[in-house]
Image (cartoon, rainbow, N blue to C red; front, side, top):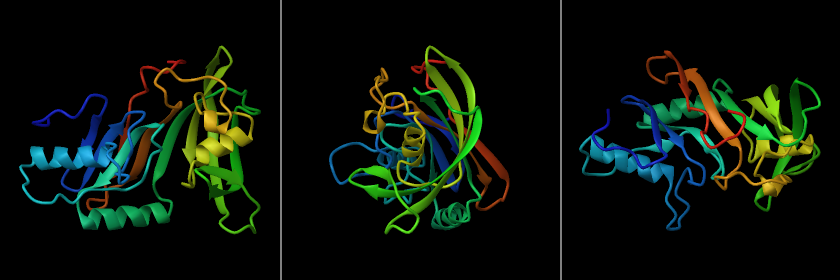
Length: 225
């Protein structure tokens, strides 16, 4: 157990000499933005500095990003070797990332794989043609877990990691994420964020090569619990 508790809402999910995984709450940036706004990475660096008794600079870098409005697993590398190897795993698509999302529109099918090309424009992702400049392939698979009151809980297996990919692709199919006004949601989420949660990551440890699965618990403020 850590000598110093993490801030409220931030959960410790995994830690060893090479990796640190935390559960990010809705509304917190993953990485510093150059402003005074707090970030999970800065909090994680302070946690490592205090629990390990470090007095100088702490090497700690996010392996991936999570939207400020979303919650769930964020993985950090504590060594340059771990960072390099995990980035290579991401490029080779050998890391499995599972999300949960509550959507407002009825899924056209209980299970499906969505394909699109997206480009990043003005703080949002937009559908594009394959040949358009900046267009990148976006692939995800989803399955419906349960539904009630016009809301539908989906489990999403993210195949590619594009900017706002899940939000844009689900909205394109008539299934905006609850609370996501930017992509067409009609209703707010009590937390002020969106009902998108990075629930699990599966990968090989960058040093031991052991199979690792890291999970973040279902957000207690969400409906359809």
